[in-house]
Length: 374
Image (cartoon, rainbow, N blue to C red):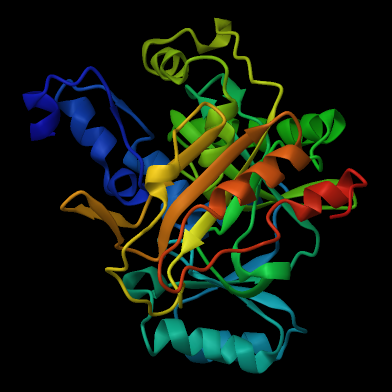
């Protein structure tokens, strides 16, 4: 807040979820400063998976069945009464890594120990959910809302697992593409009517009107959408493929949320496709080394179609080095999904650092749905 005052910021846009969950919007609002993001009470929709699941149950929003536990033994007894697979989730913020899909009771017990005994997720694992496993295909939708009205960004599809063919542990996201061919006009209307509209109305009824960007992580099975998760901010790497497709100035949309007038704002998207590939440190999402020099960035002349998003990097003496698990996001816009995928992998080949890892199948589900097989 002090920095925002010093530079006389007209508006502050919050990227990560933790400050929103801690109540930064409330702090700014009390001090007469404008901030784009939900209040502390509204941000609980991401800050507590228990709250989110309770909300969907109370307002009949399609979502998995669930049970909540704060005791390891009771959780394990429950798992032994269920047939795998099932999903074990830490209640609080866990950097996208607090969700474990368990294909056996033994894996469920390991997940319980990870949270209750080893305390891998700290306080985020004080309460643990066991959710019904839902088979289907995932998609993501961003709604930018003022609490009453909203506009939607193009649909996208994230790739959470660290390895090709959706294998390995969950990550913060290894790549994404947009728009997702899975979400046609009919399905989008169903998502709006059964999930987006009811969620925004529910938050208002709960005395937590939601203002900002609300991310809907969905799963689609036999044409039926259900909620897997909510985020109280732009999801990563979905933002890297949806925001570049926004033709309308993003600041126009944000000011309309803060100042009013969103209902009357016409929002347009480019008629293109975008694909993002995340370049990660070797070993991510587990232990990994930092400080690897990144080569090839000087070969990029950033254009409206080829974009580089820095994530886990640091600059020293004019050179870039790795400084995190997910290091860079490379995005390419093409006239269609196939050309955006081809373009992004051409871009990726320009970059190198020791033990660099990335998925080589980003967007393939979309191509198959379009009847294109690479």
